[in-house]
Every structure is written in C-alpha cells, then in structure tokens.
Image (tube, rainbow, N blue to C red; front, top):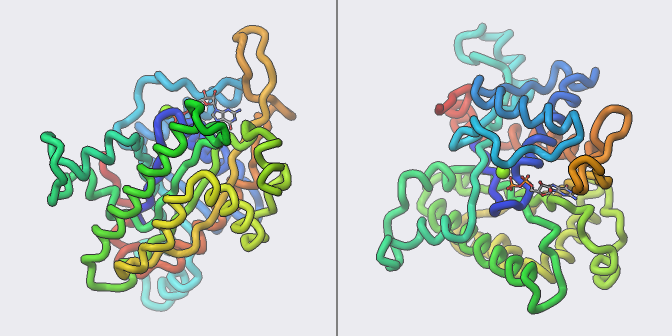
Length: 322
Ligand SMILES: Nc1nc2c(ncn2[C@@H]2O[C@H](COP(=O)(O)OP(=O)(O)O)[C@@H](O)[C@H]2O)c(=O)[nH]1
Ligand SMILES: [Mg+2]
C-alpha cells in the first residue's frame, strides 16, 4: 500500500528517516517481532539509509548534503498476515506469493512552491491537469505529514510564526488536492485515506508554549490514542488550524480521512565541543531518542496494512521503481 512521507524543507525528514531506519533494525531484532515484521529496500536506498544510520551511531546529525540520495527514497514494510499464511497452507503458494501485507513508503520533499507547481500552470493559472510526477503522491493511501515543532511559535510576527502559518496553508492545499483527486474514484475503499501526523524535533518546543495551552511537557503515551489525539489537536487547533479543518472536511467530497494518528519524534541533544553545535546525546552507545514513538509508529502501520483492500496491497507487493 503506497504511503507518502511529506515534509517541508529542513523539517527533519532526513533525521526522521534515519531514526525510523534505526528503529526498524532494533524492532526487527526484538524477539516478539521477529516473525511478524520485516523490511527491505533497493540497494541504493539500503546504502543511503545505512550511511544515515552510521552517522547517528557516532552521534552526528545525518548529513543533509550527502551524495547518493535517490530522487525518491522508497522502502517496504511487511507484516505477516495470519489470513494469507493460512490460505497459503491451504491452497499452496501459487496465489499468495508471500504471506505479508506490505506498506511502501516514499519520501517527498514538499515545500510550498512544489504544491503551487501542481495546482498552477507555469504562467500562474490554475491548472486542471495533474502532472504525472504528482500522481504518485496523490495515489498514496497513507499520508504522513511531518510537522517541524521548532517552528511552533506564538510570537505573531516572528519568522517562525510566518513559516508555520505558511506551512499550514500548504498542507491544507495539499489535503484539498488529495480529496479532489480521490473523489473521482468509484470504490469507496479507495477513497479512504489514513493521515498520520508526526511532530518532529519535539524537544525544541518551548515548555512555556505547552504550558500556555494547558498541556503537560510530556505527551500522553501511544497506547492512549484518545488522550494523545486531544493533546495533539490542541496544538494543531492553535497553530495548524487549516490543516486540521481540511482533514475533517474531506468527507464532503466523499473522501474519508480516518482519524489522524499522532506521533512525536525527539532527540535529546548536548553541546558538542568539537563541532561547536548541539549534537545528539548518546546513551549506552545509542543516540537518545524517542524509540517508543517509532515502535508505536511501526505497530500502527500493521493495523493499516490489515485494513486495506487486497487489490491495493497486492499491486504494491515488492514492486520497486528505481
Ligand atoms: N533538537 C533537535 N534537532 C533536530 C531534530 N531533528 C532534526 N534536528 C535538527 O534539524 C536539522 C535538519 O534536519 P534534517 O533531518 O536534515 O531536515 P530535512 O532537511 O527535512 O531533511 C538537523 O541537522 C538538526 O540540527 C530533533 O529531533 N531534535
Ligand atoms: Mg534532508
């Protein structure tokens, strides 16, 4: 099932990818997950993500200028399906090539200009045609929006406030675009979209900003999605209100956005004398980051992989585009 990871420039995409990759490795190694979860990537991507992983391992931020990043970074998650495993045993391997439900992630760098390019012709007119490059993105069933928490700001005329409200507008435009594009589909299942919102760099939100909203410095745990949703939506309502409204409004076009799932990514940092910057903090030879959030993220996709109609899943199975 196609999944798009979307984020503005410098919102922490590469770091998110590196942490997700590190978490996949750790998750795969845990006894209870060994048979249930697998991941893979094409060699170019494996090599790129491997390099990001190694940089984290020595306590460095992933290098933004690193060579070898494919224009589209894609990788696959697979979750063992009890139903498919059973069917495979029953009817043999022919119809069920592999007993895994898969999620195919593609990462898109989307700044405001890119969204404007999709909806406008080069002369600036509103365009009727969707460019082919954008179709892939619009075909995604899961949309993972990365929100840079560093930009969350209550200072109305500050630079980060302007960037934040602009990103809100761009995300809302993108959601509207996804709704319009998918509204044309006949099968209601294909009009179902799962939004996921990840707050990146959450360690950088000033505590007084949270306090002013009546929020605790610690977000509620992932197993209490209800409380967590209330917590996250308090932030969105204040700072990303257009995005939240468009997620809820998709149903007017017959496109149902599932209730968004929310995750928080944070890396503890310390001052690095050699580099003269705040670098990731190490703890027991690993960088200190919100692993349980990434674990919950991986678990959440198991639920989505099982919910999607089979045609969509099968079409995506171990197909790569490089
Ligand atoms: N404190 C903190 N800083 C972060 C975190 N994630 C990213 N950063 C900082 O943001 C910079 C840009 O992140 P990067 O992942 O390269 O952003 P990208 O341009 O969207 O790929 C990094 O070099 C770090 O300095 C985080 O979780 N906590
Ligand atoms: Mg990057």
